[in-house]
Length: 245
Image (cartoon, rainbow, N blue to C red; front, side, top):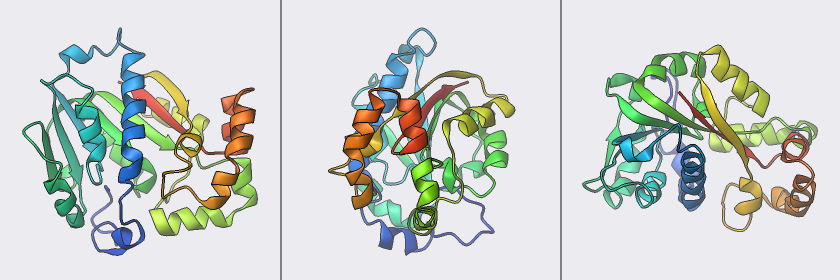
C-alpha cells in the first residue's frame, strides 16, 4: 500500500500481514471481473486492443493483475507497485514474463502507463489528494475502486469505522458523491462509473466481510432491486468502480 514515508506504516512491518494473512487474495477474481466489466462497457472510449501497459498502485499480493492478465490481450504487460516487503514471497508465485512487481513507493518512479489502477488504495493514503495530483498524468486512463463506507448503518454502528481503521488501515471514508466530487476537483475526466456489490457477491468467501455484514445480505439484495444508490447510502456493502482520464 502507498503511504508517506515519514508515517509509521503497518504495511512495511508485520502488522497488516498479521491481521490479514491472505492479503485479501480471495477477493481478487471478483475485483478483476469488475475491472473487465468497466473496460467492456466503455469500448468506444478505451480500446483495449491499443493498450500495452497496465499498472496497479498498491497491488498487494498481485492477484488482481494475475486474474486481469487472463482477460486482456497477450500483448499487455502488467506492473504492480507496493511498499510492503512481506509481499515478495507472494509475488514469486505470481510474477511472469507478463507481470512484474516492484517493491517501492510509486512516487519514486517516473514510468508512464496506458492504464493506471487504484483498486482499494486511496482510503489508505495519508495525503491522498496530493498523491492523486502527483500521479494523475502517469497514466492515460485511470481505474479506481473506492469502498463506500459512509452510510447510515455504519454511522449508527460508529465503532465499525474504528474497526476498519485498525484492521485494514482505512484512514479516509467515502460515498459516491464525495468520490465523484474529488475527481472533478482534481480535473480528472470521469468517463463512467458503477456500483459494485462486494458485500453481496463475496459474502460467503471474503475474509473482510463481518458476520453482521453477512446478515445484511438479504436486505441489501431486496432493497437494491429498488435502488442501488439508496442501498449504498442506507446499508452499505458497495464500492464504486470509476473509469477516468
